[in-house]
Length: 304
Image (cartoon, rainbow, N blue to C red):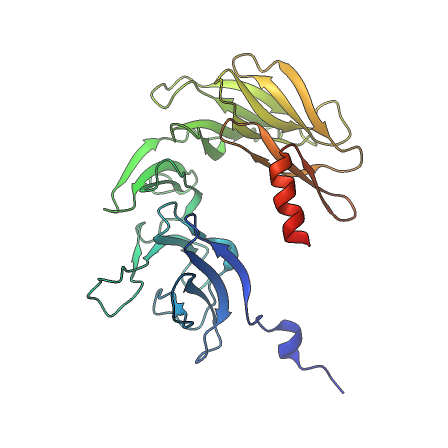
């Protein structure tokens, strides 16, 4: 007997749960009961009713919403998601706001566009210290380049803050100030990657921190609390990527914090001071190396 294709290729009943920053809501993905199209659902964890609400979005009821393109804003009331129209790869940013219990609208989670049509969005950044703001990259000025815009989630106002000089493929923000202070640039001639930094969001003076020639891997992780050092991953001079501490002004290596002898670092979680809490690797299975014993205790409880 043949296995039904729906069992092999169909959507799971429930998948990809995302807890809101305040812990009150659970966002998850499940097919719409009428169309079968994958959509996002919201559950209020403290509500007495067990009924969940489907996240309203565009009128397109034939294409699924992608779990890897959906995330919470830090206000715990707004759900952000990227979606293109009919597969044109021009992703617009949508915001769905969870209505309060005093709302008079019949639409419990009205959806609005945060970005204009025919403009692609990427590099969306959120920050718990600035819950009403986000950063996003748009190619509105030049279709081949992504500049960084600050967006007010309440008003929807967009402000162009950082202009792409032509080589930057990704931007990162300083956690305390939520200013764009890291630029990841690609050299089209030799295919090398360079991490550039600046001292504040007000200065236009950028400097090269570290360069990875073609074949080498590395990325910027975070600024440290002292604002004189930072953490990066790097494979320079190594067989695998390591977590390193660098001098923020000179790029000088100050400390090799962690490296796995058989595989690259997969992910790094840091605390508010920019110090590592846990590092993930994946050689033959997922492994976590803890620097925070309290976090390790919590993880062991979840495992049991």
